[in-house]
Every structure is written in C-alpha cells, then in structure tokens.
Amino acid sequence: MRSKPQHSVEANGSKVAILVSSYHDAVTSKLLDGAQSTFVESGGSIDDCQSITVSGAWELPVVASAIASKGGFDAIVALGCIVSGETTHDQVIADAIAEGLMTIAIQWKLPVSMGVLTCQTLHQAHERAGGEGGNKGSEAMHAALWTIATMKEVNS
Image 1 (cartoon, rainbow, N blue to C red):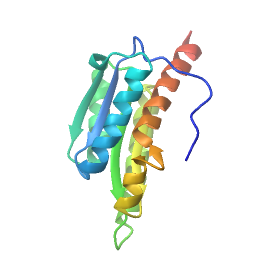
Image 2 (image 1 turned 120 degrees about the horizontal axis):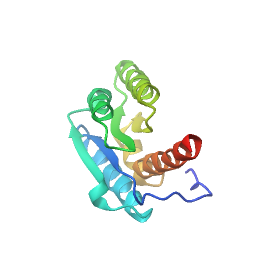
Image 3 (image 1 turned 135 degrees about the vertical axis):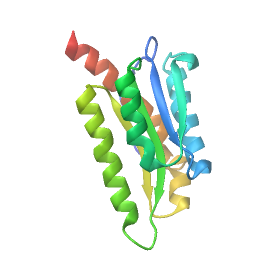
Image 4 (image 1 turned 30 degrees about the vertical axis):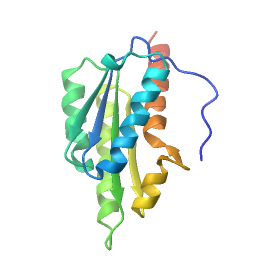
C-alpha cells in the first residue's frame, strides 16, 4: 500500500468533475466514495465536486474531453475498473484510456487524474477500492488537488 503524500492539499475553492464508469459498479462506487471523501476532507464543498456516470471505462476520455472543452472545472478525476480476461483486450483498452486522458490534460492544460484500476481479478480490484490496497479513487483525487495547486503556482 502506498503511503499518503507528505504535504496536504486544499480543495477549498476548487471545482472538480469526477467521471465514474458504471461497469463494475461494486468497485467503481467505492472509488467514487473515496474520491468524494478526499475532496471534502481537503476542505472542499461537495457541491463543487460533480460526479458524472459514464457507461464504461472506454467512454471516460470522450466525456472528459467534452467537460474540458466546456470549462468550469479545475480538474477531472476519471474512475473505472478494467479486469483482465482471456485475451489482451484489457491492455488495449487501458492503453487507449491512458493516452486519451493524457492528451486531454496536455491539450487543455487541465489536471486529469486517472483512477482507472487495471487488475487481473475482481478481488484485486476490491482491494484497491477501499481494501488493503487503499482506495485509488482517493489517491486520484489527491493527485488532482495537488496538481491544481501546482498549476496555480506555475501560472502565478
């Protein structure tokens, strides 16, 4: 399990969109809970933390792109769960999602945090969504908030 970062980040005054895949909802709902809890625990108002459900992890980049182009958010947190199957389909999907989200972040100069689990089993996914592996939704939100702060510092 990864330890928490040493310095704190503040969510107060920040607006974040959380995109959450409905596929593997038992896992992604826990990631969402972790992300929202981290936002509020960091001083943010739940009203400034909008969650948007997408059908699956594959759809995360296109919805993130629409949100980025619309504006109004300081960061996007993308949450999903991909479980390996009998083929390498999961790797193709994960690579495309990662590239798509990074492209959006760079194009729009907007923090886009990837909290998409890529696990071999559902058990592993549950462990990373609030089990012994921590909550990767919480970690993704923390990374987004940290990046918001860093971007403000760089742009000042």
